[in-house]
Length: 136
Image (cartoon, rainbow, N blue to C red; front, side, top):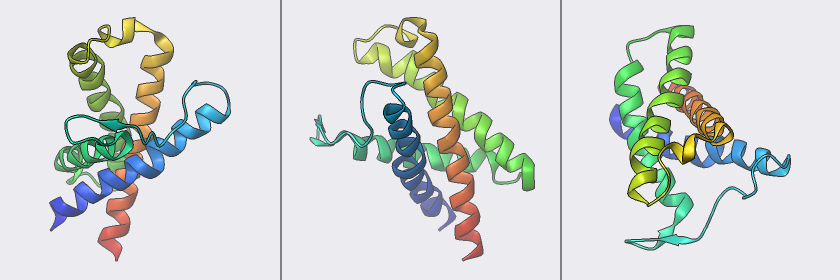
């Protein structure tokens, strides 16, 4: 059951925290595109944001597996650090090239910092949601 909750935490954290920060950055003029992209993506033609949330759910399981034994502030810290680094590294160095984009977005500092911020907030969201689930 805890792994299902970790998946749900990653999924929801993507929709709320990751996309919420993305929308805030968009409203501030930092990024040119809004959050919650509903454009369909192959192969299933589901909205992009739901595809992202699905992967966020899988990452939530992986993140929880790595930090579940940490306690208190250490769990929050590792959630933020690993949440920022691991999905960002995979996106920048694996997913981007597979999609025909430059490796690490051409090493654009804005893109790299943006990825780290968005995914770090996502990681904090996973920790917070798992804490809520465990208390409920």
